Image 1 (tube, rainbow, N blue to C red):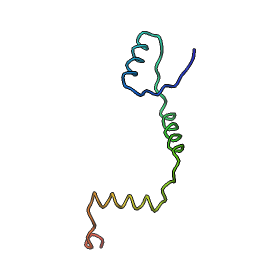
Image 2: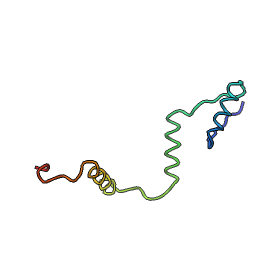
Image 3: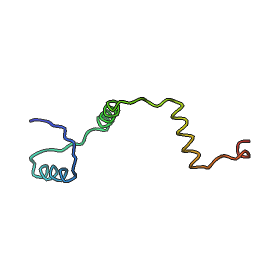
Image 4: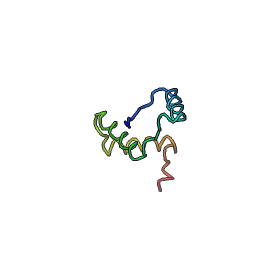
Length: 78
């Protein structure tokens, strides 16, 4: 028995695989969450680019907070 990992591009392919499984020609097993996470990490690491600095992340968090909450008034700070 051979084992393959298949990445489904078109949802119609999933239906074909399910049909083959229903005819007992193949078995379909989803990847374990641990393997899915590793695959995602590998994909992100291979994309390259520079990682954001702590300052970049802090600035982004503050920008999102200010959009959600509006700017803080001086009264709210004291």
